[in-house]
Image 1 (spheres, rainbow, N blue to C red):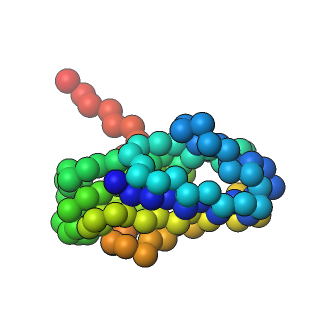
Image 2 (image 1 turned 45 degrees about the vertical axis):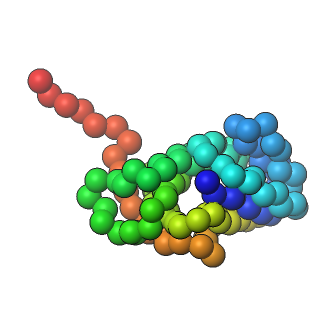
Length: 119
């Protein structure tokens, strides 16, 4: 499991699929998270997918045991950690976001959102 601290510097409140609202100008930590969605009004949804010990095909790094995938605006952050994971999301005054960690490794990747298969 991992903790996510959300810092809201945006002009609107943020919402989560867990029922928590993060008021503008405040911070909140979601402890021991699995999968959830963060809603940023006017910008869209940031999807946190708990991968457990499953690795993403084609990405030999990061190498840590546990993982999460964060999908937002056609970009993904592939995060892996040992023990208790820690993510920090900061939403700025214009709705832009940054993500960081103090425990583990994270890389930016790009996964297809839609694939057409011909039979």
